[in-house]
Amino acid sequence: MSPMDKMWLSFYAMGFMVVSMGLIYVSRHKLKNKLLKFVSAIIAYLLLLFCFLAMIYLVFSGPGGSA
Image (cartoon, rainbow, N blue to C red; front, side):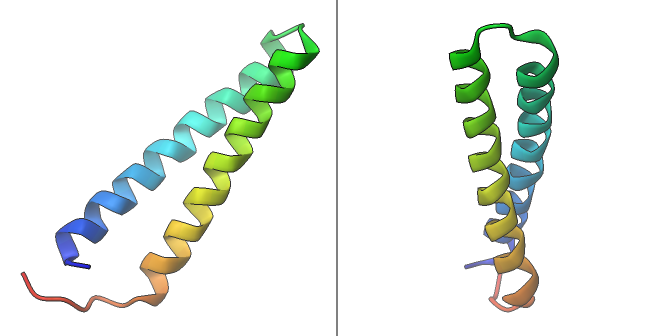
């Protein structure tokens, strides 16, 4: 994976973290419907899992690659 691809992956991961933070806030404080709360929380936690795995990959893969 090229360094530019790693940069974009890290940007996507950070953006998904912001989205998941918003979804968790909405599911805990704004929604009253239990099904919608559950669905939004599941989506948020799946996004957080993706972010965790992406960051682990980015940290441990090193700078490598050539431009």
